[in-house]
Length: 427
Image 1 (cartoon, rainbow, N blue to C red):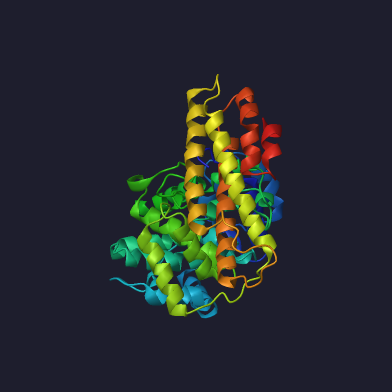
Image 2 (spheres, rainbow, N blue to C red):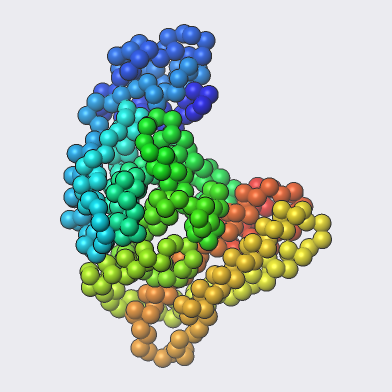
């Protein structure tokens, strides 16, 4: 962006939007050699696309375009009202959030967007993939959590704004990596892991928002225990708004599923070191307020067998990591990486023990499975499985020699049997 190189994925989305709404140049657009590519006031069309891709510009394209009829605060509030009416779990979070400060809807009504962020939000709204719905949901939850943590009204406003804009960096990623249901290979994860930083840079460059907004956006996948990304920040190194946004994003991802509050409550209690425990308390209160019930889950022996296999995988993987960390010829950074992976897996083992994944609950052939217990096991299994894949991705992104990657290959197989072979191929 600083070199005024046009991102082809973002430009394609702009061109698609221009086929639905008027998108015009707010000033003359020149390439780096001084050639005018588009005059002020001219409409953007697909004819212009090739010119913009082939040339560096004197200014970022984001700073030179405006969409008419795009997303504004009024549409954001209407979207929030619809989501609260449709999603009882989100409504319950709002209902139980305590503290001083404006309501989430009042915060959203005060938002202002420049040309660049209006364009990005409008692309999300018109994309048809519920991206704007997710962004508004996170903004509402972030506002609620910020109020409960007694952040100032100004920081509550920043949390809501950061929630709305946290994923705009994904507009610059190859859509193939964001396809629903696609499980990324570890080496492909590098394309997605940068989106918090991309989002931060876009906000810092194109908006005059409080610095807390861009910083929180950069931190929305960080975790208090240092297990997040992209910088593996921990504790006080994460800003108050960043902690709020990280928890809101994680919770809202689960609210889109059946029994979302129950899933979020279990996930937050599974590994308590990742988020502020006061936020977990809000989710628990919201679940009780909603008085939802998971009912009788599908109580099949295969579910428990899967849980037991996952637990054995954790134990085997931890032992492998500990052993590999003692291998001769490793660089200090690779040895530190393996020791960190082993420590993280020990934490996952403790979480698995606390959720009972190591147990076979009933003898073979015995009836009477507890549906709630099976549901809790299913959520715990899913959460721990995701964290094992994250560790596999961390290995894939590490700077290691080919020999070190070969040494780590058995560990990758334990962490993620599906994507493990890709790491060896990537080396």
